[in-house]
Length: 241
Image (cartoon, rainbow, N blue to C red; front, top):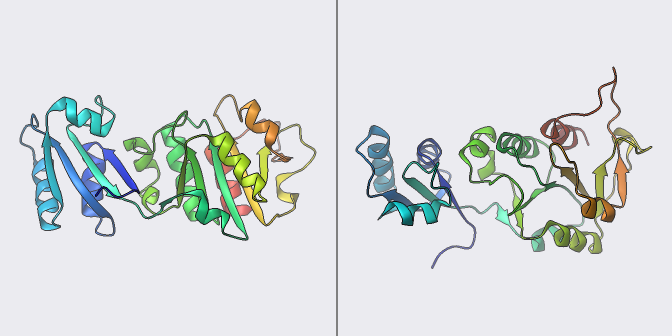
């Protein structure tokens, strides 16, 4: 039986690093039959066998369907059982929480750095849409997160609008950053249930999401600086709010 909280990563470096991490629970290692002999592949096999991990061989097309990234999988994929990947039920049962919801973050490095900041700060969970956002399985995301992807509670959302509406009904305050707001983020009243929504690198938070956000706030900046990188903004919220 395939576990529910399964994340499939790809790329030789991310797969090798994951296999070397004994804290991770691995479900299966997938290899392309066309892989040429290499030191990295040999080490993957050695680690998998020593940990009793199932090794599966596939043709290129089958492997690409598993990795979902034919151009970058490098002939390898790894199924990881992530206990930190969760759903809304656990979050809704909490009486207090701080959450970051990501609306269209397209740059993998930004996503990875946001995950890292959230893990370092006082953030209870990240809400990441399955579509319209950089894939959490991307090697660039994993590298930029410095391995914190495997530690940070993550809720993958099928539809961010519906997810946020559900949290709002459950008593959460939806908060977006708006440079035109009169409220400064540092002076913002702390609510019991806080959902900070971070928007796309260039477009910001989508209109439909902004319309359901009850609270708007801005980061006051000096020297005519107009905006900050979304990953920097995430760091401020995660560590200072």
